[in-house]
Length: 419
Image (cartoon, rainbow, N blue to C red; front, side):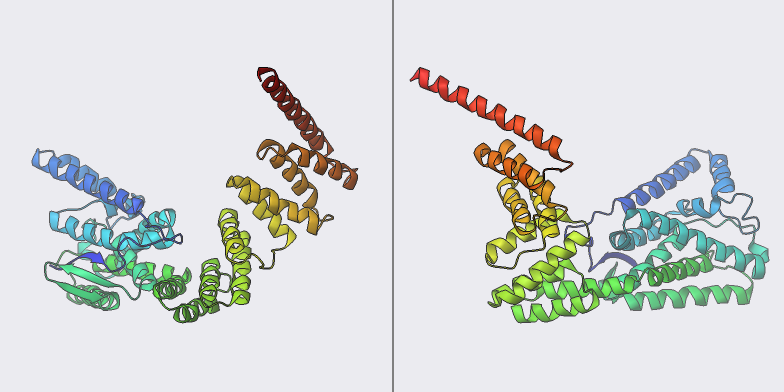
């Protein structure tokens, strides 16, 4: 028996380049193993009638699938025999982590159950139509759900190679899928031809689960996501700026708004001394992050651009306002104030200029201790926006300036007396 135990993809990486921990995969493994252990202990302790009742209520019986319709979901958690459990546990672990990383844990759980249900439905259809003699035999096991994961995995990670035990064998995932389909469909057709399921395996459930996963992966365009991920990985590994530029540009051709590609291109052009191209890609990356509501990432990239290219063109006023707010949230108060003040200088008539000016005053008063400048800016605010809806906020800031000024004067007087 050959069992896959690892993939070249490992525990796959998410969009932020952190390792994705397969919590949902682990949860399914724990539930499946716990049910199997309970069933085995019950059998060993002479409580086989409990196990029979569980199978009666939660196993999928093709002859009467709608008597207990929930069985389409629950049969995947039931196993009979250690070998059956071991095989499915290995397949769930190897393929589950990659699929969970690709689609997220919520979709992964839904996909696992839906693939099992679809596979069970196909098994019921074939058995009720062509194999009536075995229609009363219950169907159990996670094989159909795992087959669904194999289908998704093969589309998303089409370059991966899998490691098998107990022999030191490494096979391309496409080869594994081809052998899997050949065996399952061939065995299923043989069972139909002979009128029996001689090996006791629900091959049509496996085939149905795999087809469901394959269809889902195509509809969700996971093949395109895989191509982009491989392009990004190749670009990241490129050690020469010129090679990296070619690969990042190839990724941008597929995903014009990819902020990571723009940021890496900016750094690569910077290494080559082309500040114009570098600045252009920095600005595109910042804009892409802001469009994706990733203000913190955009702000950090803006800080990097300012450090590397002090004379780079500035983002638009609206973008500067968002960056200033993000920098304030990141507690970079001095740079936040500078960025927000640039909005008021560049576009005093812009809708965000009023709030930007008030934010600068607030930062000067509460964060930077620059109350004299805050007082000057507050007078400017009232002159520039005499009918502003934010005048009550300006009044609060005025009182805060007065309070901090009195507190500072009192402190200075006390210090003088002590001297």
